[in-house]
Image (cartoon, rainbow, N blue to C red; front, side):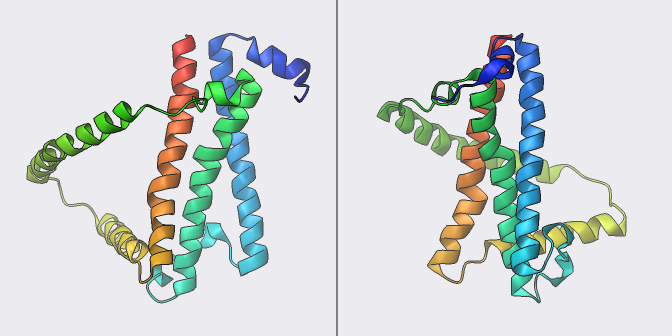
Length: 196
């Protein structure tokens, strides 16, 4: 076991509010470091910056779309997957206990989750129809252009001409964000709020 030292012991024995502040600080620093490393790797490998992607070239240049998918994956991992492990180790000292990784859920939990998801679909569709009935004011041209660009990016992003690209899309758009969200919000944020 690694010797965590005086600083780590001080943080783990501090007030819950200070733990939350330390967790937020660690989250920001770790995310920035991972994104900076990804930017450096992108410039080194692809000779293109992740921060300067020209979104208007996505439909024309497939390399830009591939780079955007890589940037999305890196962003999800940097913001939601890596920080919870570091926060759990530094602030709480126990990664598996803090992130609730010590035992798998029972089969009943999976059955209930599936049934609740299945039964919530009609409610979600109903709320979607209600939302479509709300009249929104027309925005300026730049807002409409941005919305069309986002729709175009999403359409190109979700196309999967091969099984490998389909699986990568599932990884980038579903698995990594879902796992990261559970780790960050259920494992770290909820634990910090319970400690109050």
